[in-house]
Image (tube, rainbow, N blue to C red):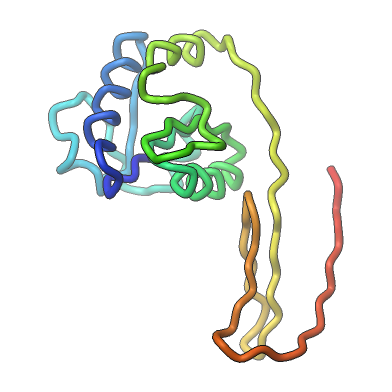
Length: 158
């Protein structure tokens, strides 16, 4: 799951694909990336969620926002996420772009998964209840004017 709006993300995604192939791994991506990676030996999935179900690991190439976005989808499919940082800071990335040789450890299963807490945010509105998942934080905003609202916060541990 690359974020191709990031500077150099295309280049580093190609490098990531090449490394994964070198280590004997099949790579699949959503079909919307087919034009960006036409000759890379990638299997393109017509259905995003079927692609998630079929994969073993989600690799996100971008910044922390890209990784958080990928993590929300991966969590629903109960898949681990490896973030490759092409952003500025990369607080939650597992690898930097100069560490792509370490993808071999992922392929060999020689890694330790770090569990992170996901937030399940439900908003009750006149139209019904809307659910959102968040990895890092959740922000409730309604514009420039403030008003008093009621909150119910609960914790369901696993």
